[in-house]
Amino acid sequence: MAKPKEASWLEFWTPVAEVLGPRERLAVSRAPGTTGPVVALVHGLEGNWDSWRPLIEALTGFRAYALDLPWRAGNPYRWRQHGTPADWLRQALDLVPEPVDVLLGHSFGSNAVLEHLATSDGTRIPSAAVLLAPFYRPESLTVDWRLHDAALAGFRRVIADGVGVGLGERARTIDPDVLTAMVDTTLERIGPVGFLSLFLQFVGTTELALADVAVPTLVLAGQHDESLAGNRATALAAAMPTATVRQHAHYGHFCHAEQTGDVAAEIAAFLTNTLMNTRSATPRTPVP
Image (cartoon, rainbow, N blue to C red):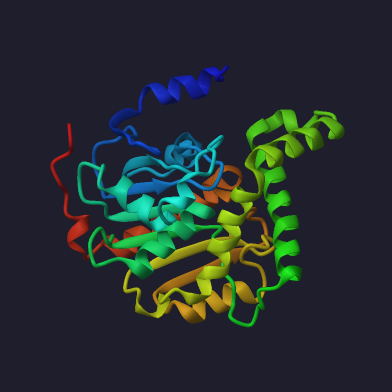
């Protein structure tokens, strides 16, 4: 049962598009607010479009559309056999009723954005992008069973963090054994295909033509978030000259939900500077 605050907030979102295909469902909802540049929100693996609530409440002056993508929570992971994350993202972007100025992704969603920028045919390209807690593999990091096992252990830790964030204040008082059981149940449901979807995306980042990406991109991550820890952040910055990579000691993997104020302030400052002199910053007639 949804909390009253969440239910109240969701009532203000407007469904604008939904496609029930033979294999997957795609949908788009518009957040409250009718002025400013258009931002498309790309959730992470096992996330939901409504996971953006804290950030969008703090990030004002933008018109936000949340994409509901096949890697949502509870999905059976059939989507990976029928398209890459960038393929699915492009299909969802086609449902947004106006041109998108900014792509904003989290975790797996960030990497879908990264893949889209590096492999696009020149269409659906935003004026700016923001990647929260993406993952990147430097070329020096050999793909072997040791890396596979380390990634699987890291995947478990991220899922555990996600369960904790979802529980909110209850995570502080819940029995540790119960919390462990919840994480185990989540991992069992996701299964190997879910993990491998993420692992293969991680491995493939090295092969993306990021030097050819012309879109100004802000990358935010925690210094201790292993998805971009150490030389991974340095390697991403070197591979993608248009990216500004910033790490903070107090940011976690779910920084948009836990360090919301700081993240919103960084995003707003970056987008204000980036969009100030672009056509995308010109006011448009709001979509009714």
